[in-house]
Image (tube, rainbow, N blue to C red):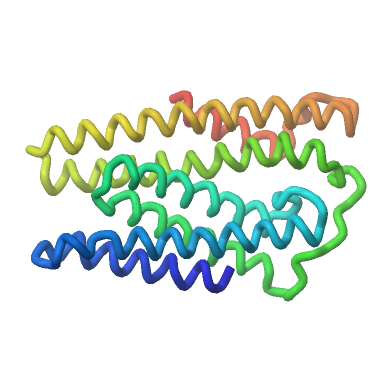
Length: 220
């Protein structure tokens, strides 16, 4: 994951350079994208290694979940870049990967990220369904929000470029719908897991409230 962070940083820096310096050879525009893919491959291999060691999905702790959200956001950014080919998606993907990696390292400060799960969480079925679904939704939400911010910056600096703004708006709308589906479906699955584990579908605890607030925000 340190290697994936390094390549995300390199991708971010090179994407900014190519976006700001228009005189650079357009044939080299693929460099930020290639760096992002290399970082993504390191990110993916790290998750696969953890799954192999622990024999469970890579979403059992907050540390793992943040790394998995980084994986989702960068994957979506790569797909968007293949469609758009303008390095803006690379900028979004590398930025989210950097921030999420730094956040995850804060939860790995004690050096041990292979702790034993408490009994109620030790369920490969629910980790593979509820947690994977809702973290996929969170990763897509990050992409939607970053595209939204990019839309605001673009509209402030070049409001006359309506075609570009319309394209960004459509991407933001599409990713918001995808994020809404995964977060809402994941929240419902979490309630079913809660019903099986604690005998109640909903208890208004902070985690449940947080999941509900994200769904409501996406609906708005």
